[in-house]
Amino acid sequence: ARSSFRGRLPLAAPPRGFCSPSSSDAVIVERVGAEGRIAIIRLNRPDKLNAMTTELGDAFAEVVAKLNRDDAQGLGAVVITGSGKAFSAGGDLQFLQDRHTDTPSRNAPIMRTFYQRFLCVRSLPVPVIAAINGPAIGAGLCFALACDVRIAAPKAKMGLTFTALGLHPGMGATHFLPSIVGPQVAAELLLTGKVISGEEAAQCGLVARTAEDPLAAAIESAAAMAAAGPVAVRTTVRSLRMRQDVGLDQALQREADAQAQCYASLDYRDGVEAIAEKRKPNFAQFEHYREQA
Image 1 (spheres, one colour):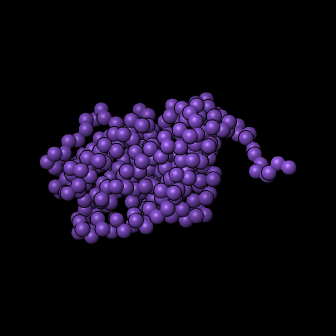
Image 2 (image 1 turned 180 degrees about the vertical axis):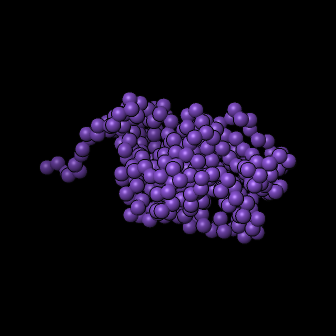
Image 3 (image 1 turned 45 degrees about the vertical axis):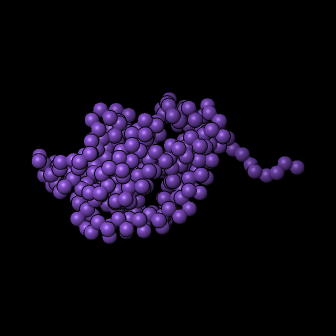
């Protein structure tokens, strides 16, 4: 078998029944290491900085379903990364624009469905490592938060920039982030929409560590996990996620409802227009919540 990733782990023959999508697909998969026990999943829309679209989400969910259905027996760990310069630059602009012209009663279930396309990553029975090779912004970072471990390039830009767009955070951001970095750091990151580097993310515990080649580092870590006792690893993954998932469903519904409310606001419309026009948004929708006499 030919070598890959600087010769650290050989590419393995795919398990019986496994079919890797072609390089033209939205998501591509390859198996590496001894007996192909590590699956590398790549978001493969580099021309769009792997923006999170319905198409990408459907393709990812299909890959996860196939791994769970056909290929889970020999699977030891999964690494997720992005093709090109970005991990994922977040929400697709057209999708964001469409939400403003839809209704809150439709947008809430639309968002729950959208979240699940990517959060199905948590149904994989083995450890999942996000190799953050470049920008992970908005929903792109939320996707990484749903993984078990994150390893980032030192200069990779990361931010939950929702409020800077006039939008409530979504896809589990308000649930996962406080449990990872603590409530105070989470509050600052979520309320400001601040973008930080991989090095800063490591300092606050958002990522486990940084590496100049985060994919190689993630594969090395995945190999160590895959070499441990399979039953012990899978049951430990289940225990850790069960603790994390307490309250997750309620948080996702709250986020979907709050996002649906924000989508209808004038501030959100200006925030999306500001992205398209490459300018700063002009937020002006200040409200009070006192009862009228």
